[in-house]
Image (cartoon, rainbow, N blue to C red; front, side, top):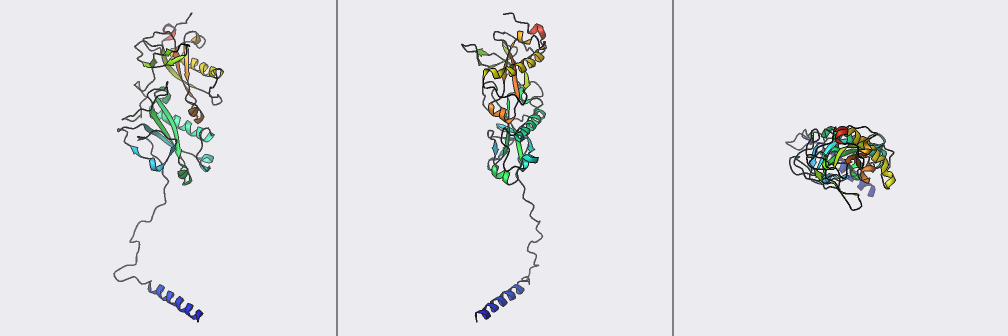
Length: 301
């Protein structure tokens, strides 16, 4: 009896299924009604040349991605978006600062930032950071890295981020307020540099930005006094070229200030060192660029 009941139940299911094949009256049986097929899911990728009101974050989450018009107040601008490829793209998580893959991404950001700004970003009051996808974004297939630029109030004394209402695109192609220039440097009682407030080059000053020394990748970040000598040597070379005097005499004409980025920047791949020529008792009232031996004579005292 139990077997017969099961057979009836099955027969009923078959009959219902056959009946369901006929469309109800007034319908054509096309359940999709010519809807377009659903496309393949896409992975979130941030836009290049976009501005953001938030400060830099090394990890970008979709929930916090709110770009704004660059003509409105913002503190960050994405100058380029690149892609982790090869072994970096096949890893289980985004490359970490200090890894060869992250250093390669930083170098790409550095190069693209030059083209975007019109000059090396280190010649201005600017900072470059590289941001990567969140862990969930990476798992979902995101393989991008974002090159973000921030204007700072100064780069000599750990300046703060500055709000802008204009894009940085082309901002360093010509002289302007972003460019590093002259300073009226003050000393402490122990004759070390205390502060480097900016000054007009036409006003009395004793320090001037001379350029950027590209330190070799093998050079370690300075932690002791003896570590600084290669940085000074590199900046003396930059200073001599800036003034237009011989490498053999530059050390008798001026001192130098060498400012690499912070340790985290160094780990990320930033090997650019800002170089300043500095004469502690100098009273210059013009730029020393191209001034030659007459503008920066040998000092005998």
